[in-house]
Image 1 (cartoon, rainbow, N blue to C red):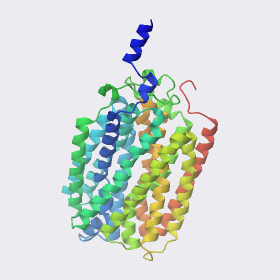
Image 2 (image 1 turned 90 degrees about the vertical axis):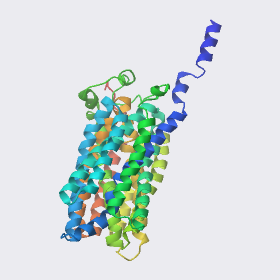
Image 3 (image 1 turned 90 degrees about the horizontal axis):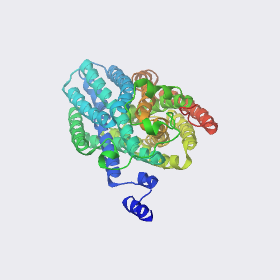
Image 4 (image 1 turned 60 degrees about the vertical axis):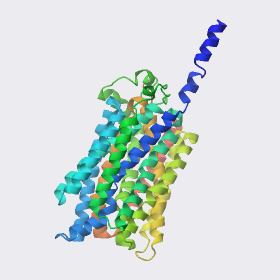
Length: 453
């Protein structure tokens, strides 16, 4: 008997819990592939924002006034955001049913195709078609990433892992904007910027196609532990790997009150994030008086310092627990409100750095809390069974408000100026902070609902 026990210990030197928690080189490679791959998405997403001032100027030379061109391009951005939101609702469930890797790779391929189509297009109708197709395919990327991450990593590290992966849409965005700004500074036109972005994303697609795997089991590694408080209950571990129907995945999520509060938080935070992502270079050119290439470069500070915020917020979330995330959300949104009011009071062309610093502060205060919603919180709600669906619904609801960030913000800035636009955004930030307070109070006294509840 002792010999059998000793042999068993030699064959399996680590207890099961330790084996599940072990971080291997393949775990590190998976994080790198997902982070770099999703960063590459921004070559074909932030490109329109970066070249927007030049594109407005280009259209104005073809019989359209600058204000009309701004409104029309804002409308294109809004239609693209609506397509992105619709795609989120669909692609999240597809990732849970058929796998996240497929979503992740198909999003890259589709985005490359429609970016090239945009370059070959001429006029508003074809620009609209190409941008809508691009955003529709891009909607599959993040939910695919979340699905793969939920199957590779233990719930005890969700906050840290998703903080690192969230850097892909912050540091990645900042890096892509910096590269594109350098191209513009060296005389590359907007079509050249789009072509360079499509080529860069294609290289990352090939790397992920070769090396990325859906689960650690495909690399001979054990499956990680899932949050036992996910909405599917204790049976999630046994049934999570089975292919489930749409209603079986959706019903527990939609029956959760805190899940709907998180969706409301996504509405407010996504409106703010998308507004700054899209309009910051144009604001810096029109209101602050910067050159287009300089505006593109300084717009990268918003996602860059947001990335620092995500790292801090991610580590805090694993240390403070679920309600700690809610408190960070409350503080971040209240402080963002103050900065937005300050932006509304900043005079134009008086100082080049005051508005830049305030925009950067909003990025730092907003993006860390924002990263929780379709990241660690989605994985907490959905576990391995429904994490992509949770992320898709949360993101999809948020991007419904993202429509306002394009068309509506364009009309407000043209009719009432940038100051009034920032006051409206301050009101949205304050309302979002109130929702975060309700969620914090609710989760102070309740756990996430389980299947038995």
